[in-house]
Length: 465
Image (cartoon, rainbow, N blue to C red; front, side):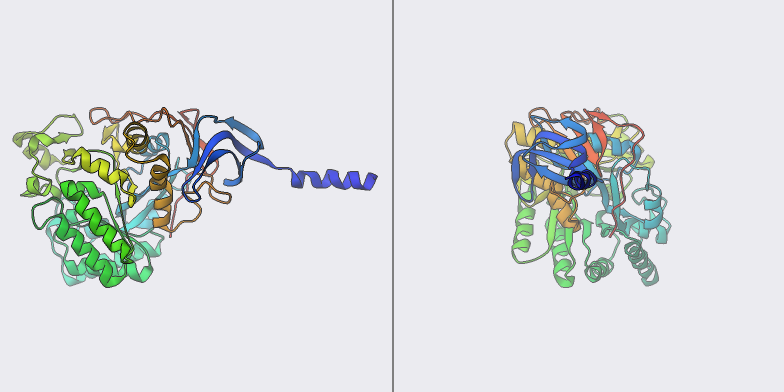
């Protein structure tokens, strides 16, 4: 008897199910299994260790009764890759923010600058734009201003550009990022070579298409080019911000993508829940003829991010020489709603904030979908929205441990009140945190707790191929 008791005393700790953190009494929603039920979530060692119908013991127990517990949101299209931007992302429920459209180059240095310093997970594609800017000695920053936009490039320069993109993949880039509209002199052959590279590496290519809007050659021609290159090479394809490219032709674009999917093509797309885009006024987007390419809008539909003012012909010319971000009010609300509700469309922000200036999508994209389009307008169901924000991006990336509220998944978790969650960021005042998102965990560490950002924590990790 004494031996049995002694043995039990030794072995009991091995069987005790005490977790680092327990999120108790919440409404657990997992978009892969369609679980939607009261559950207690046990976290241990940065992973989800239990999804239980009965209470669990934990060193820290947080009662989240009346709130949704779900997988943290994954933003495939986040240009803001700074501590300022990560803070807005965390308050919006995002646990992973990726620069997949423009991408980066060189890749190794970009990751090294963020390792051990980031509030949330980060990552980037190997970027065609920065590679082209480097080879052609463009003077721009995030986007080209001169040589990369206006120069075709010699065969040797094109080879160097493709080699740089290949090197970025070798260094762990999550795919290939391409913004054709910003480098309009890029030959179709150079683009096809990048699709071939993506196919060889079995990695997606994330594309801002060549043209937008209804004026031919417009968005339909541009989408046909991308679909043809994907068919010709077998490259996985992701079309970014379909509404700001398609504008009123968004439903037709979605029909084309849906048809390609039905015939076995690996093609996906995304949208943000706003009626305006944003880009640099000095970029090739605003070359001669920009009004037609952006749906027939005028100067007054452009809003200078630094001041909030609407532009005139005079201020357009002055600010274009200067360069800077401008909101482009061109997307009809019904097109936004149609895209957000469409089952094939993921949610992605395309956001960037700098010193409190930028587009409200940098701060409010995910809460806006949950508050405006799910709760208020009933444009889509809550589970469908969560699927677009977490599982579908994880599937596009080929990552099994994120985007799911399941045992074994990374403890990247968002907790929110479905009756209160809402965005507060506006075009006039974008630097406002979302509301109703109470807790956000990254690898099992709180980055938001009881609605407040946590100081001195940096659990974010770099995602690589």
